[in-house]
Length: 500
Image 1 (cartoon, rainbow, N blue to C red):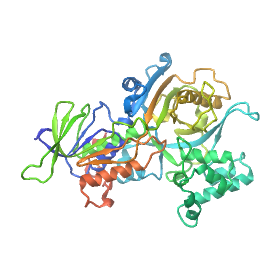
Image 2 (image 1 turned 180 degrees about the vertical axis):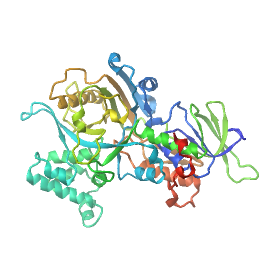
Image 3 (image 1 turned 60 degrees about the vertical axis):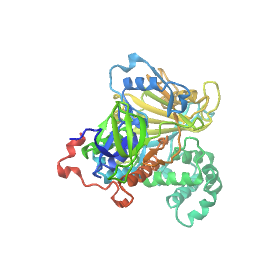
């Protein structure tokens, strides 16, 4: 048997983030000689899920405020040790929702990888309303997203309902004529203005629609906004009544990444953690070959040769926009967020709460410049013990974003408790900053570099599109796209246990 250094690898994949792990899944039946490495001692890369102890170690590595162009920066942990005990936690770096119509879902089904992922229902979307003269305590208003929801809502005036129904009907078929004639001249304009001018939606209904887009800056364009709303509405009911999106149990996209790696291992890929790349050198082709190779020096002092190298981007531009994140664990009762709203629907494990720009202010009194989102997970996700909730808050980064996230956390608890918070809103907090990168692949000879992962709150299908492009290059341009991720069930061969 050849040693790893003597083997001529078809491809070396560096990193086990979602990009690389989906590529590993796609190549798992290709017969290619695959070496999959990761400089970290854990799977998942920027989509990893951690125990509290692992978060401490991760935060120590990413505590620098400026981060010197790295993906994560400013990590800080605060905890109330007596309140946490020895219970198990699994907190996600990428707690993204996955809409039922996402290409990722269809590919996980086609590849049979879905059998090894437990998906949970994402329930209601809420919008925060600050105290006012008519309501001295803050409120959470549930956003209607189906025809039945709109008609059952007593807070929306009858005329406004007609305007909203007109928009919902329009967006379901927005990519066909004559609808395209209406929106395409405004494709790059802000969606909010289009909602007001074309559909006469008032500011409250505009907030509902913008919230459903999950746009971090709130300035989503007409084209992107209509596409996103269409995906949300058409995803409703695909896998059952009452929900449009799902979430993988045990850490979100981290679980998807690990399933991809396990599939590749079953297919013969070799895995090495704690093994990064310290140097890459091109090698001239041997006399009996036409392909040039790359020689990789690994951080474990091993040298390997490969036809192609696929890796993830490690750095961001110092001018890149950034997102501030706060992950919190609370013992406050948030069960009202997860009430069943539709007969026959599964109990949701995830709820979404949006704080529109300006609806909350920092501790210094500065109104929030951007929307803030809180993705609330019950213990059914496996991320925290029963009776506790994991809350993933995020907003665009600026000088007051850390304070705004803390205020959003307190406001969320206050709005559910009727304005009274008798204890600390959280027994655990992880704050950090994540950089936003471009969505472009970088090809340099036989080295391919994936972009930084999107920071969207719902899964961005550009990821699977990039992975498919890389798959085509690795397996050969002549391979038909209809073969991509289309696998027979391994259970027929008795290999299914290898996933476990």
